[in-house]
Length: 138
Image (cartoon, rainbow, N blue to C red; front, side, top):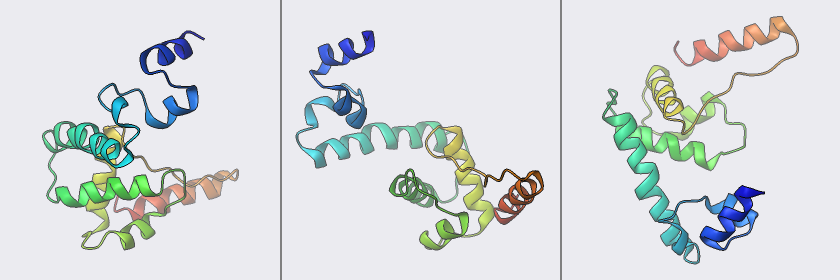
């Protein structure tokens, strides 16, 4: 209840609006202009995280590929995207080792993560995990 009151007091939003747009004070006045709001979120939040948390702390030979990989993850948010399909979508992606490394960097920054296949059968689960990670070059 306390959180609901705070968001209403701070932004005058209902819970659905708050969840959709997030509680970023700098972006709040821009929600009526969708394109400006999206540009602000990308430039101020996403790009800052990629630049400061990833590019300055890790070796990234293809920063444009890392950014495209993040955007692809956003485009498929909440959907299943196989590693092979991701490789096909990212033109000039290089090898699976590079993509795997970039996915690990994005995971470490809390931006995008990959999941192993699930199976109730322990043998299948192990096989899926091994095949998933070997296909990623690990």
